Amino acid sequence: MSVKHPIISVVGSSGAGTSTVKHTFEQIFRREEINAAAIEGDAFHRYNRADMKAELARRTEEGDHTFSHFSLEANILDELENTFRTYGETGKGRTRHYVHDDEESDRYGVPPGHFTDWHDFGEGSDLLFYEGLHGAVKTPEIDIAGQADLKIGVVPVINLEWIQKIHRDYASRGYTTEAVTDTILRRMHSYVHVICPQFTETDINFQRVPVVDTSNPFIARWIPTAGESLVVIRFKSPRGIDFPYLVSMIQGSWMSRANSIVIPGDKLDLAMQLVLTPLIIRLVERGRRAK
Image (cartoon, rainbow, N blue to C red; front, side, top):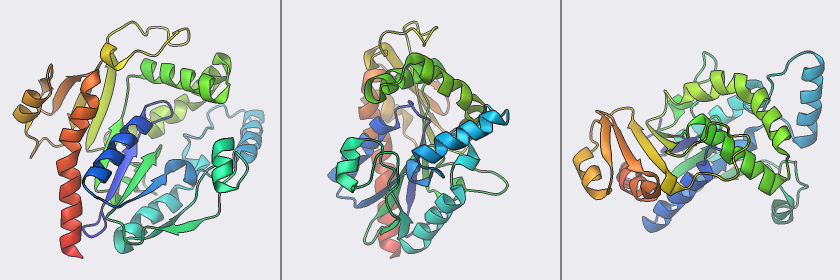
């Protein structure tokens, strides 16, 4: 953690909706004139697309059916931890970009499924913003969570997460439902042992809960809308959170526990603006005063 160079880490698995949360953060940064250096979790995968496919085949041949991008060993998490630590100390770091598709290939000049070269980032920035799979990992060997100043979990209930992933991968990547199902099954071990434990490290979790039937996500024809959902916002520490103010500002919200507020799903952006803006401003102002 750093006073001068704060780090915000948004954590969620594939299909969780972290991209939507990222958009809200970007709105806050623009409105408050905050210069945020952004890095992506995909940049710290260990393998490019072809090498990952080969590694999956090798491990499957050896009887390992649990290896996936969620796995600790499929990522260079020591490099991610070092990037967080270096930024916290100096306000600078090193990252790269994983190229997903042809559009990104045109932008970065690298074929899809490959990484760009490593490059420096952060000069003159107010904070570091990370979004990805492993931004709050804590093991006996690695403590990425301990390097971040504000950790946000994006955690839809699992059936909804699967529906979102199936529809996204089908629409944008051309995967069949069967292929996505195989990926979900392969990732389950690391989902339990790597992804879920991070949500005990996060400071705030946003958990979307559908109020329509999602009992069989593998045949769902559409994703439940925001209006067909509730969102549970859980604060690790409720100290300093003005719950009466939030309930009064967010129509239809209520407190379910001493550290949790429930809101209508279509009020998520408003709730994030109300909850996160003062926390972000506090981090940035503290950092600017310390420099």
